[in-house]
Length: 160
Image 1: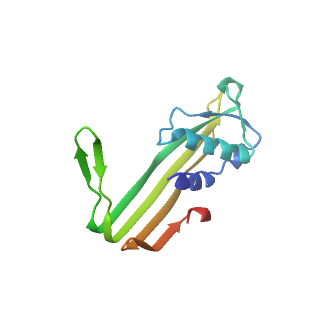
Image 2: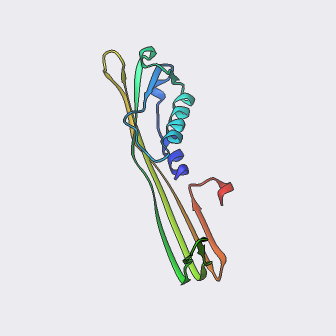
Image 3: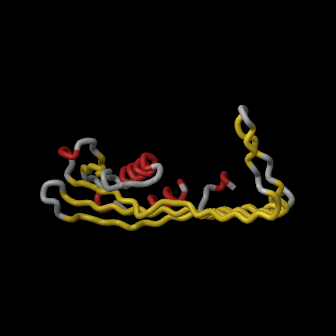
């Protein structure tokens, strides 16, 4: 999911705001792992030349960040015996190992973000982006415990 968010944020174009003093308004941004996502948005704004300030009264413009959605869809197929929890009195829970003849685990992460920029004093519209969308996908297929297929889309090479 983080890679989907990074990909979406990299698609945000804030070049028209270059060189301007801006305050990033976070109150409309709700998302899983919002601190990481907002940090990535800050980094993207700064790499495109936006000068971020901590106090909205020092800013020429306000940039509102919004999340249209961040999530993961996972689908697993198992032919075999799944891992089973077995409660043991006074000791906790013991979990049996999974015994898979065939296992297919698919996962898709998606993230979408948008920005709105306006002048602080006049509240006049300046720029809007998005929603910028990013996605990642992963699939692992194993036969008798041996992974025979491992696919990754839109993820860094070191994760493969």
